Image (tube, rainbow, N blue to C red):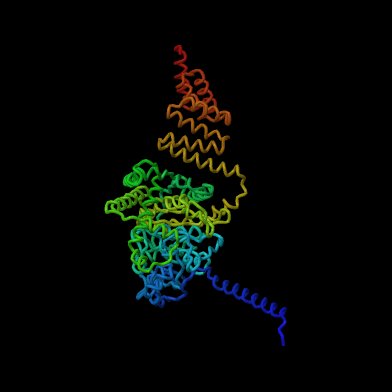
Length: 592
């Protein structure tokens, strides 16, 4: 009996539909863990000690580890199938994983990393890029992408990663969770594959600041005790200017949170580029060697260059033999970077070492025992999957410049989420001096709730653009006031300029700028500013006093006397106005 062609097409169509549905279902099953895991496993903690001994500190918590950490019986895959094929299973579990398991936590798996843990994008063509749970169209950040995704997707309570040039801080920022990079050398790296030996640190992720701190105390082997509060919180103003989103979206949240917890007097502002220029002299030597001093480059961008150079050189030193022997297929950009690296002379290596030592000394000196430096985690929102932005020179310089501060100084840094901007996670980073890990964990624990509340307030605020500009103007004014106190007159003027540009209807801004102009001997500018201030506020005593001073210096004695007299009308007990008016009247009476 002949087959009906129409029936065959129907059967074929049904078959294809079935395959499509099966494939779709299969893909869904594969992505149930957001593509975070390479291996599922279970390392159980030891039994609880008998009372009255306290239970294990991490009891009831689950965690995952990036595929850089040895676990007995499993091959450490290093983000590349060829590495897994050419290496044996680990004969013992890494010290840090064992410490956590003995502390009561259960390890449930190994997670995806970037190819050979080299990049900060989080993309891996071999095992698939883990899906960013908060913004699936964006990269999760790397190198410890899967570990960050596992926490962000609530698959585990915390996870481990390695931070070399941002491998924990970047994915924490891109996935909207907390990420901690400890002080260099604070946590054992035995049983952890090296990436760049002088930069590698074992870091961890969590959503809950309490869990972050509990894990930290176990890893750092420190006991709970009295908390220290910061005595200064320093905003790195020039670093915030590199942000590709409105500066006050991050800075204002930190400022408000600091004021609420510790008071405004703790806030300070620093131009980090200027500070590091004076405190890290080897940077100038490095710059001159590379460019003969012909091109001016900021110290923070120079730090990015130093960090990238060390990263590439040390990576190649660790793994060049394997790459040359196995000849694995590598990402084109990665291969190009490996080919760029020339041999570093002993003198160049010593110079890099000097920069690291000077950086640590500089940051330690800036922060002392109780200071926090506030910087953006990265300059950009998470780039789109497959986008080219992340490979651009501007992106690399901006991002690695910010990341190099802790990487090169060896100081501890924590990434803290601050809600969303244009549906993408945004974050801020807090840095403490080398060895102050517990202090930094305590500070995050104290400030975290308020930071989230302030971030939410900012996002949900229905204030107009005018209100936003006024807030920014107030911040600029405060920076100007601090610069004035430090007798940095020109710097103060630039901040007051910014405030006036944002809000030209505030008399105080003009009056304060006039004070700075007076210090510089720019009496005509001072007079003009005071006149603007008085037009806006007829009762601004300081504006009358400052205009009187400016007019006196310009030789306009009669007008100056009128200003001082009017200041006395507004404030009869003002001694400065009284003495100035009396002195000038004598001068005027003498025939001037």
